[in-house]
Length: 70
Image (tube, rainbow, N blue to C red; front, side, top):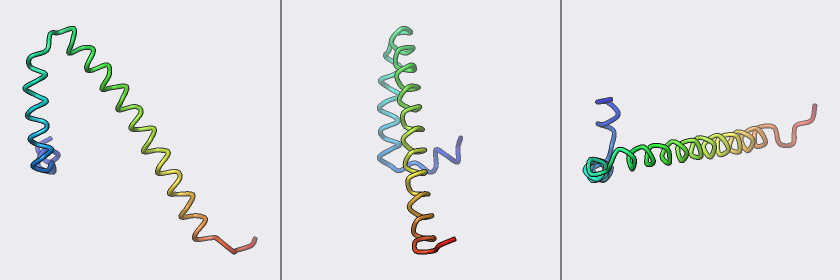
């Protein structure tokens, strides 16, 4: 985790610090709701990355094999 933390920009570190301080002020119920929302957003983000990757992969394959006939 230290290696990942070191890869954060100054802005990201600041944002994380602010977020951490805000989370400490949440009730248990609020924290649970936040985690559930964040998990759902992470799943959406994963799907977006997969879609972007597959789209880019198709573009690369098309560029490589454009004009070639079997």
